[in-house]
Length: 135
Image (cartoon, rainbow, N blue to C red; front, side, top):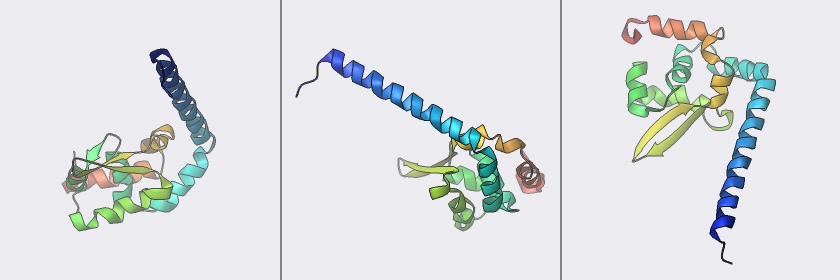
């Protein structure tokens, strides 16, 4: 079956429209379940300044090496701070590009305003107040 140019463009537009609608539905679901997400994050992060800092530092894409340096931690410890936020939780996204590993926090973290919610805000401040982390 051969698809003409007009049909191909229509198909591309339909796919983009579906992606936009799915994204909108995801945002609505996050906003409706905001408190559940916050409660789950409290369980995952507990009192770990480093886990809170991981989500704070990954607002923008960051390489694993940059994250290790920014956290001021030993490279062997990085998975201890990132793994609980990955996978089914979906709070942190890990991806590879050119042989390097990168992280970026999921959009739901921004939608719930993570950086301004207690106790996360305090944990981030505690992490920042450590001399090796002052920015």
